[in-house]
Image 1 (cartoon, rainbow, N blue to C red):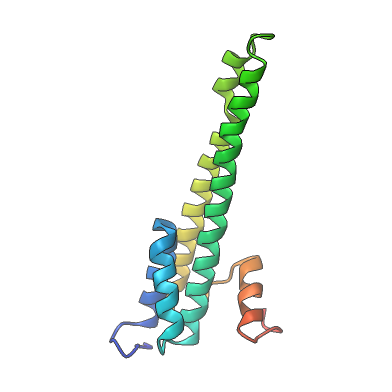
Image 2 (tube, rainbow, N blue to C red; image 1 turned 90 degrees about the vertical axis):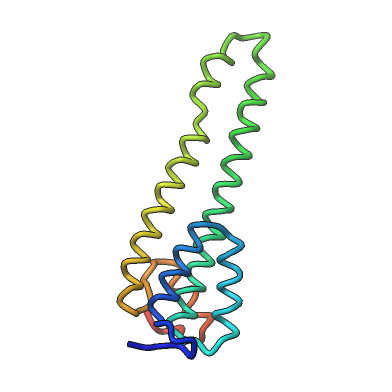
Length: 142
């Protein structure tokens, strides 16, 4: 088992990284800074970097969908006097369903990443792994 100088296994720091990414962006950024500036293993640095990218991605998607939801309802309100569709369409709030689906997807990805990172290896995520490997100087690694 690969231990850091703090006596914590590298796999446990990776697991905490993915879980912190699910909990919120602030604990994720703090752990990201800690992992990059400590003498942690390259596996920990890659996993925490991937968790940070996932956390930022899902935060942006949920924020955009929430803004679209608000704008969607306001847009329907413009036509409520001319047409009586506001009452029907406001109940269909499609973007809030997308936010719920996005939250479920984020939870599923986090569970997968936590289970995979317990093995002490870099978690394989399709696009994000290539991006992280490129920036860690390993462009040909798949």
